[in-house]
Amino acid sequence: MDHDSVPFDVDGPTSHRIADVRAAYEKFARRGLDVMSEKIASEPAYDSNEQGHFAWDVSLLIRAACLTWRVTGDPAHLRQAATWAQHMVERTDQALGRKNWRKSTVPAWSAGPRYTAGTSAIGTIGGATISLQAASERVVIERPTDTTAIIHSIRDDGRTWSSPEGSLLPHDADYLPDLLARRSSIHSVLMRGLPAPIDLTFLSAGEFEVRHQYGAHLVHTGLIARSLLAAAEAIEAAGPETVSTGIAADDLYEAARNALFLHDDEIRTRSGQAWYITLEDFPSRRLGLEVPHNHVVDAATSFLILGRRDKDKGLLGLGASLTRRFLGEIDAYEAGELRHPWYYYPVDSDIFFGVTRDEPMAERCISPVQRGEDASHATMRVRALTEWKAMDSRLIPDRTLSTAALAFRRFYLGTKHGISSIRWLPGDNNDAPKFGQADTYSGAWGSLAPWDSTIKRRVNSLAFRHPPEAIFGATVLSAAEILAMNTGGSTYAASDRSAPA
Image (cartoon, rainbow, N blue to C red; front, side, top):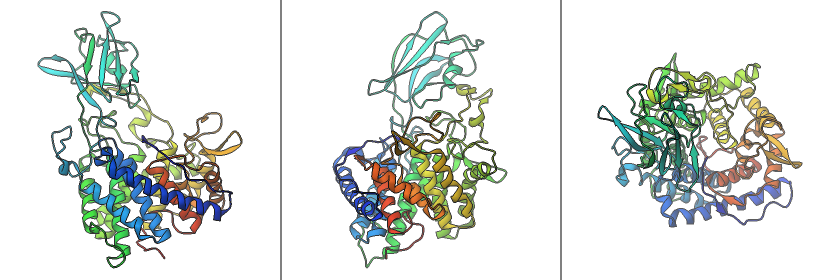
């Protein structure tokens, strides 16, 4: 979860006591919403999703504002949510006239080079262009020998990613295009446009500029759509006589629906199981393979909400189908078949095991990716679990949430220098030594408190020990969730369709 934090100076709670934590985190949530409101209104970076701010800041702030309104009853926060929702609806690619990588303008929110790889032409073969795809400003081809090359990708901040030395001869085991495809970093490079394995010794050494491209990423669309639905439900729950907003709930439902439907051609259904893949021509890393769990959960929640509202069995079925892989992995963990239920990619996917294939040429050899989910994206998944439970209790049995809470305690909760903290990746103290940002990624786990008697105490300990010192959307939402947990209400922003007491 890439983000740009804002310095923050509100005092933390004076003790672990619920009353003290609640009071402090109400200040955090309210002040955080106000600070970010000023930033959104004044900084051009928040006028589009080019740098991902709609997805990773504004959408989470909308959910935080809806939740804070439900807890406090203060209509100012509902107005904030409605204002930001309108801000995004009025700044789709269509509204801004922005063209994506297919030269189309769509009713969604494309991201630029921070998240979307660009392209750089490095040669031609038979009149067709051979290019390097990279999420950077420029690429450099180094030619150590007549038959080898090294690719360097240089970002706008000056940092560089470099490939190993690869062969330019098509029958060598370390053939450069295959060597590039086996890299798993978001900053790695792919070679595009090859019709088949060919001799590449004609490639010239030198520096090549990367042409930026734009694309609407499923994870961004899901985050934004989910926030628009939260705002729409809050506006409906409040009623027009309670607070005047500049946009109608129906307009938000429609904007979310239109954006989600743009990704229909990314859905594959096998044996009744729906999932998303990345389109082959999308400027992204692992083309045509299943996307991670965290890319899907907010889309699943959004389809369940839209299906319930519209009484649309097709959308309900799609949303339910998209939940099954994650829920199945929790079941497999309960049965002792998995070490933990927090893997980044579905454990039955091609990318989890690795792929060797003839085409597309750009990625014949894909190494397996079996890493766990990081602490930031895990919060997206636990929020979805409790929202799915609220919308359809038959979908999520109580034991599933109890298991998720236990898995949090076992695999994410830890101590650093004797102080409670959150591990960045699931594991134990030996194989997961890096700790995440406990001030940002702890509140979501409070939603599991009804299914684990220790969760509230543990989250409050994290809240006491790690008050926010810098904030962005996820930090403010976490603060609102801690506030809601200590107030005794649900910690999700909507879906129960109720107004504040």
